[in-house]
Image (tube, rainbow, N blue to C red; front, side):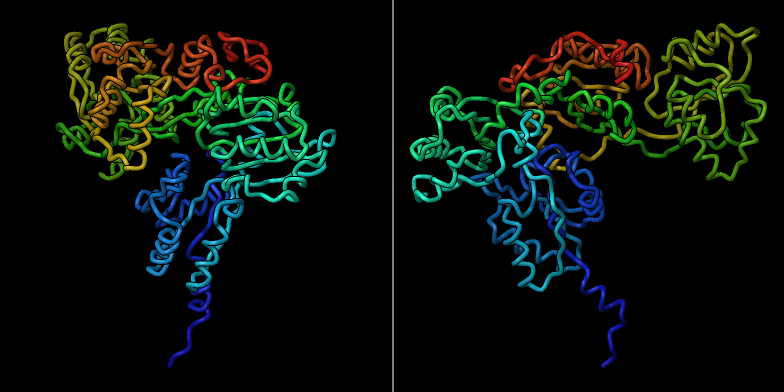
Length: 548
């Protein structure tokens, strides 16, 4: 029998399953290692509360399985979860078990690791940020502080505290102690009763944080003696983290999330997150949650008399680009045809706007003309302002959905115009995990603003969610320019905001000008300590904001 090679021996020992802590809700809290493993996964088994952004990190081909793990409503039993991990690993697939918080902090990760070991499946564990420390931190409470505690107790009240023995309860009443309770909603009243009976002072500060580190975070303060009556007045459903101890009194000084000007705001971006990094980063730093839902899939495809036009390039006087996609796919076609870029020598270039100009810059080209307004009439006005006679040949590069406004307008001026399409806009396929979450947000009316980059982006969203047209029309909409704004108006969108300029900075300023006067969502998400930021102040338009 031939001996195994050293590589084969090591391959058998490589982890096939990775138990990854997703953190408590905010997708930015996952570790770099966890994000890297998600990007290599063939199968992702995820807890029900895991963020969409984390599921998006997995490759498109990856199988995503919602295993539930919501109290009393599991989609899979624990045994089924373990069997599913083992089955896929034995098929040679890389499996990520994506668990809320930390896998080994009341997450049954230890049981899953035992099952994998018993089955002979190599595995790894990637710790996550535990809700026991992150949720209080996002509520403005440190779980330890030398002026208030020297001990930290973490427990679950999943079982009825009435069955706890007196010795355990006495340990929970020691001074200089912080108690963090997870999964305790059902027995929270009983817990407070037993702690009071055991001698913990009624005035002990208490924090209840629901949906911690998410846009729906609610934070409430009360005291141990008033906890039961508070819950009678404010029935809470999971997930709730309970914090008991003197550190809660620090919240009036330390609370920060509820002070962010866009806290709790959800903004729908109708394109890939990667194409709007600057905008996304700034919005999220101000407290907003940005949800990416691309509504257009751009596919390379040439239409019109493109072959003849590419062969005849030197005989055109003007090359007109209407979008960054037009630029990229034009030069892709030029490369495929093995045509030298020097064939453009002598041609003048018009760029529709700043984003298109930036795309041209990647190819070392800078436009000769840019319209004052980035829309069809602006292009026509730009050509009309040129010295006559207007008899030159113009090649218009676009996608498959353009109107006849620009070519007809240029022809009326006297230009000879040929149009080629270098890409097509298709409706993207939406993964089921994303569709379910977005449908839920639409039905709840939980989206505060939708940003549309083109008329196709608006029609694409309607086509993707055909049973939710009324909810889509009710979302305030930001259009990057007048053409998109006109399409939104024709589509009967209730509230339309138009960006001053079609740039990331212009879109950001328009977003802030609209949302900031409304105030953040702290008022409808609990009772934050301290004063929220004054509504209506755009940090981009203030001296203070310019230096932060």
